[in-house]
Image 1 (spheres, rainbow, N blue to C red):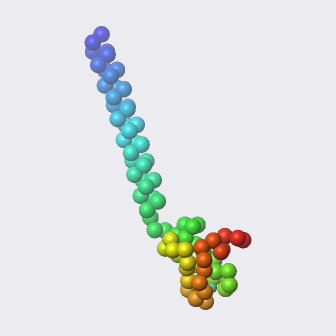
Image 2 (tube, rainbow, N blue to C red; image 1 turned 120 degrees about the vertical axis):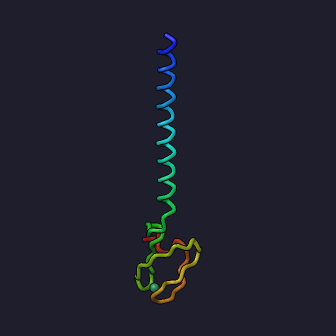
Image 3 (cartoon, helix red, strand yellow; image 1 turned 30 degrees about the vertical axis):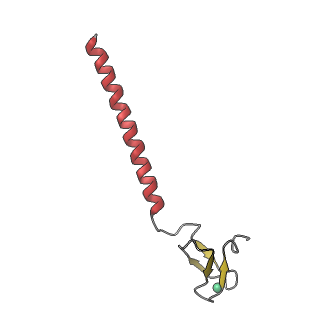
Length: 80
Ligand SMILES: [Zn+2]
C-alpha cells in the first residue's frame, strides 16, 4: 500500500515536471523567435511617393525612404 502511494506520487511529480519543462521550453523558443531580426510585416514599409518597398527595423516615428529620400511618418503607409 505504501509503495503504491509513493509510486503514484512519483509518477505525478514526474509528469508535473515534464509539463513544466515543456512549458518553459515553449516559452523559451517563443521568446527567441520574437527576438529574431527577420523581416516581419511590421518592419516592411512602402513609400507612398515612389512605391518603393523597404525594411525598417527602427521603431522611430519617422523613416526615410532609401530611394527618393522622402521623410515618412509612422502610419502613413497603413491607410491603403
Ligand atoms: Zn520613396
